[in-house]
Every structure is written in structure tokens, then in C-alpha cells.
Image (cartoon, rainbow, N blue to C red; front, side, top):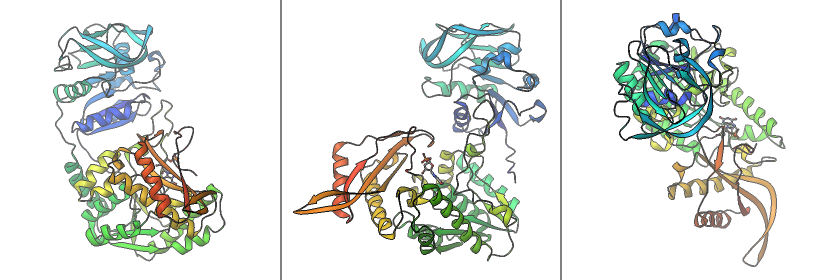
Length: 519
Ligand code: XMP
């Protein structure tokens, strides 16, 4: 099921640079819709008149490897303005008669760049004599094609910024999309507004209205079900559909008993009471606990929880007659296939969103209204849709919940202790203004007991592990450094307030080699 946004756009052709997604985001941040396509898949015949400009990304290839299977170079003849970045810049030179070769001095990191000529692309960019830009290349253009002019040079790259004004081709050897490049956004802004002459068409308000209209059209008079987890993505999907189709939406929220403290109450309060969403609340705590009895293997835990979740969801979904769609919170990065130049699928579909084989089994069509959006765009859309900040800025929470933060067997006593510890930790982060500086934080309960002393008594209780990390996307992570006073306060609070814990440790491993969750 495709949402055809049919907007004027800037098309980003991905050649495998690690920064490609940043280009898409920068264009969108400037208020213009942009889409990402793989260099292997896009053909010039597919590029329609609503593509107002093209950006060729960087990438690890050598331009002389680009045969017809890897890139349809007739795209360069469409008479659409093109900005080539790094490898993209080398492509523009090569296909216009210039020459590229391995540079004697590879440039990685910051470089100074100097103005040589005026250009529309660099308007307001050179506001001082030299400019710091981020370079990351081994090859470089050494012979410029005819009718190309040098706009800027660095010590090692004579042709660091070039243009062919007739063809509206622009090339930059550095990366304007990364924040290390001073004023890099000006280059992108000049390209899209002054050269491509595209108008702003992308704000959370625009998205809200367009998405509601599209979703209404798609769904018609049919019914939709949605698995609500209380996380950001499923909450935004639910509220968007609520605004679009009201009571034809049925949200199912399964309380697995493995949620954070009071989470089920908050979900019911927000969605049923405040937003008046059709919410079916299922308390399946006992069922989950029974199935998980004496299971300690992490993969078994995950499978049991995943399968039972689907079974319960299906049980209730079947009671709603004539449902045609299942709504999911799939995001744009989940769909982008070619983050690597091999075109391999790098993103993993989140297990909680992807409600197993359900759509096929129940003969449902999928509806994924957020599939064009990045996470930060989803957050803004959520605010536009009147969701509260607390939901929007929530840390990610895994589908299997507290089960994978409790190595070893799961008991209701352990769940109770862990919910308390996690609650105190998260509350302290919020009270000390740290919550939004941290990408994800949680408490875990380790299956070991250690000796302690409280008053005159010896204690023998569980070990609580705290984890707090900073990250961009959860693929890599680093531990957050707390001040001693905070660490002291939270360890005292947990040990003194919770019966069952007498020692607190802090996880100081990054990902890799560790993962964010314990199991
Ligand atoms: P790891 O532990 O793999 O976690 O470093 C990376 C991110 O993914 C989340 N995570 C999950 N999310 N279902 C989910 O929806 C899952 O089964 C699952 N396992 C891990 C984790 O919380 C972190 O944000």
C-alpha cells in the first residue's frame, strides 16, 4: 500500500556514503520534501517533472567502476540541476569529460577552503576568507571538464567547489551535510532554493494535513486495527488515524506485565480518556508470566513473548468484524534499502511493530503512514497532533520489555522490584534534567545476590544494574557519564527504598562490543 505524496522534491541518489541520510534530513529541515533512492535502482525514465533537483551523494566506489548496471548516466541529461557531493562531484566531472584519480594526499577531517570565484551556490557561504569544511576522500578531480569553473579550493583539492552554470551542475569535494562543515547548510539551501527554485512544502503542519487526507482516501469506510505500545511511533500512528478516521480505528494495547511502572494506566489515561481513541485494553499479565515460568534462555524468552503477543492480539482483533487494514509505525530509515553501496538492507524491522505474520494470516492490508518520515519528524508530527511531550520524548522501550532486563528466570517478585528501581532511576533523570540528554536509560535486575550491611544487619539481596547511553540511532552507543553526586544519590535512593536490592552498579560498556539491552 503506497502513500503517493506527489510533492515537488529533491531527489538524493545514494552511492553508499555514511552521510547520505543526513543530506535527506538537511533538505527536509530546510522545509523541502526529499527522497532517497539507490544508484542501482533509479533510471532516468522514472524521474518525473516533480523532481526539481538531484543530489548525488558520496560513496566508497571509484568513478571508473560506474557501468550502466550501477548508474544510469542518462540521468545527467535530464536538464535538472544537480549537486554532486564528494563522490557525486567526481561523477559530474568524469561524465562531462574531466578526469579523476587517487590523490597524493588523502583528505580526511577538517580542511580550509578558499574562495576563487562567485557562485549562486556559495552565496553567503564565504563570510570570511577561509572556511572549515569536512573532507573524506581518497580520489579527487584533477582535470576539470570544459565549461566548468572553480569556485573554491583547499590546500589539497584545487577543484573543491566547481560549477557549470549552463547545465546547472555543481560539485563540492567536501560534505556540506555534516555539522562539522561551517555553514554547510547554506550550500544546500542555495542549491535547493536559488538554483532548483523549489518552494517550501515540508513542515509538520503540512505533513499532518497531507497524511490525514491520504489516509482517509486509502481507508475509505473500512476498519483499521493498530497495536499500540505506548512508544512514540505507534502513538503517533494511532493519533494520526484517530484524527483521520475516528471510530473506524481500533487500537489494541496488550499489558504483558513486563511494562514500566504504571505504564498501562498512562496509556489508558492518554489514549482512551484524553484523546478518545477506541482503545481495547487487554490485561494479559498472568498469561505471560505463566508461559515464561522457569525460562531463562534470552532467545526463548523473546520467542515466547513475541508469539504470545501475536496470539492475544489476533484473538481480540478477530472479534472486530470486517477489518481490512493493520496499521504499523514503520519509519523511513526502516525502508531505505541502500545505506551500503551493495544495496543490502541494513535496517532491521522492529519486532514489536512488525506484528509477525499477522497481516497475511488475517488477510489484512498494511498501512504505514509514517514510512516517509524520520524519527525527529515523527516527534514533531506527534506534537502537531496534540500528543503530550512526555510521550514524544520517550526513550525507546523494547517489545519484550522488562523480561530482557532481568537475566535468568522471571518471577512476579523480581518484576515488582525491577519496576520500582527503574521508576526511581527514570524519575531522578527527569528531576535532574538529564532524561533528554540521554538516548535510552533503564534499570536491570541481575540474577545474583550479594552481601551488604544495613544498620546492624547483614543483607543478602539482588544486584541492580543501571544503564544510560547516548546514541544517534541505537546502532552504536556510548555510556553516559554521571556526576558522582548523581550516582551517589540514585544508588542510595534505590537501596534505601527498595526491599530486595542492596547493591547498585553502573554499566560502562559501549555498543559495540556490548548491546544496549542485556539480552
Ligand atoms: P540492542 O540491545 O540490540 O538494542 O543494542 C538496540 C535498540 O533496540 C531496542 N530493542 C528492541 N526493540 N523489540 C523492540 O521493539 C525488540 O525485541 C528489541 N530488542 C532491542 C533496544 O531497546 C534498543 O533501543
